[in-house]
Length: 241
Image (cartoon, rainbow, N blue to C red; front, top):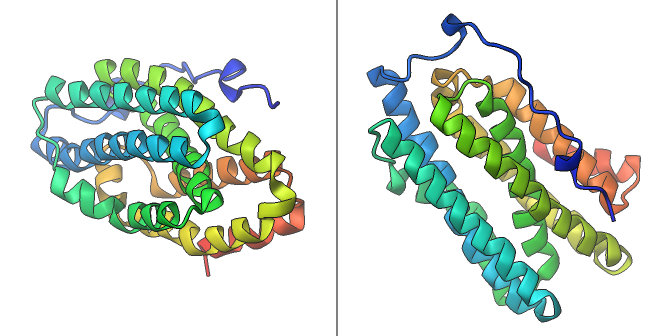
């Protein structure tokens, strides 16, 4: 089993000068944060529900999947506290719409027992995106949110690794379904990033860096699953075509 990436992760500790950080008290920051904070809250809430559904699809791992889901619920509570700390009300209607296409795809796959698609969406796509985004955010977060996010990102590697290991063990039989699920869902990640890019910029998170970090994490995950370089390149093209 792959060693947890968090085991050898060294979060950047470089000191940032005060002028490189956003003004956490400004109205523009709070306005943008109301949507970004809502997105992470909704993402963790949906992840909780998704893991409970995965426990039904993979009953032999139900206990572990429920445990992972409870971790997501704890993350959600932590990010709610981040919003309260800045006196920001998260824009939850925006966040629900933001995730709607990806979440609906998960639910449709769950209804027909498509474990491969469910795992790709939750454990590979969403977790790769969350890990990369959280790493970028940690460098520019307010002190309270930074502490919360550093704890969360460590846990997310456990969720990523679960999906990697299941897909790796079953790759011979699920590869075709994995390719299909990738083609349908990877483009959604790019469109979702485009939707919040302006707000991310206000938080001093660069859109190009976010996408680059995500694609690196995603392709590394596909390699761990056992896909070869040609297959990974073909799958990655779905993000730009």
